[in-house]
Length: 287
Image (cartoon, rainbow, N blue to C red; front, side, top):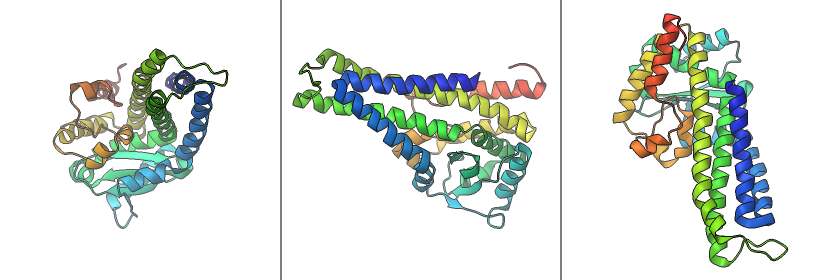
């Protein structure tokens, strides 16, 4: 069901991109939207993992350099029947973790030094199992595509500002785009894209929690980890995430210290609800 929901949401997001392109620039806008979709999705498929790892200055580690993290990931990958992903550490006091890569054969998982410092073995296993679930279900690629399309819609909205200023937005027949429609799309399209992107990410987080608990065999390990992560991330900033907010959806917990309005558009579901579902799973009752 989550897979169908995600496919529908991604389809809606792509459709919104094309509609926004046509509304903002007629046939020319539609062509621009199509080109943006192709180019940006190609880039996100092949290069998003390298870009994110570079942004956070992640360093690859071996079993000798980071034995606890590496062996935990190795054991969990074997349980899940996944190829061993590359393992990275991010030098940052904010405890967090993320996965990236276009498929399980080209995947990487990363943990911050802050996370390694405060997690017990069971909690670390819960966190990394959650990330391996994203790898297994190719959520890392889905998230990259969603973020890319949402970014393209935002670019079209910015393009529309120049179109209105310089009298662009006319199709070949000489007709002009309705200024009211253009203004409406400039405002509403990026908001709608953000809401759809949020829905994609939230649905995948719940699924990754459930599958991660199954891989680790201990739902309470992940539940306790989420409690620690929520508390610590309220106090410890992650400057790289603030500078690149589109990457926030990749982390196990939102690294952005937003106010109530920002939380309304959070790509992560409420931590309290995530913990409640995990506790229900530990008791063997439906969430």
